[in-house]
Image 1: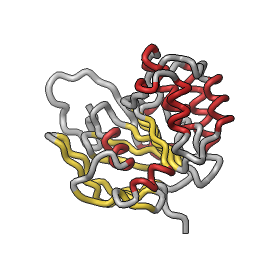
Image 2: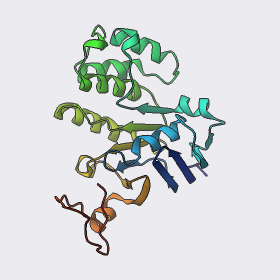
Image 3: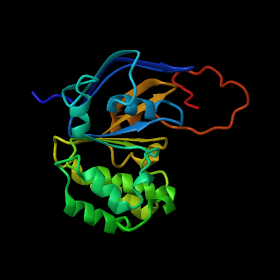
Image 4: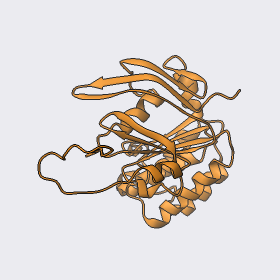
Length: 243
């Protein structure tokens, strides 16, 4: 039996006043999972923990049948991570950064990398320090998408992307999950970004996983309503604030 892409059991993390979990959930292989929540909800913290960037207070994390932290190196060889905070400026140019990263991954596809550079309108000679925020996101995406990673963790990858770049990204994700052994987790604070792309949706608020279901079922059961408020919202059955 194939192990899940991600399995969390009673995952609990705390730093300062922020607390994540406890979270128990499973992400099957072959799915696109949308991780939705407002800024500060815990999306990045959760993805960091899955990737081994931080240690939980308690609980267990399994990725592709391997355990964090004991199998951290093996996990990182099979998982690609895109985060807006990743910084490649030390390598000077896009070409040098790509040459450095590709050396760690036997699954690197040089042809796909070249195609994505053209699609995202980047050049190997471009200086990273002079790139816009959106340009740096594109570079991170190229590094992730140029591999045959079994699991892609994409943290707010649409921030800073223009319409064409978003279209390219979504096309690549759909191509990836044609292989039922590959899985994509993509976070956003906007459900609209991902409702046509994702198979399943997880909603996180204030460190708590409040819902996880197939996307079509979730859209039938929940509605997102933006309101201006003064003071506290009245208690109402079925109404949950995620501000």
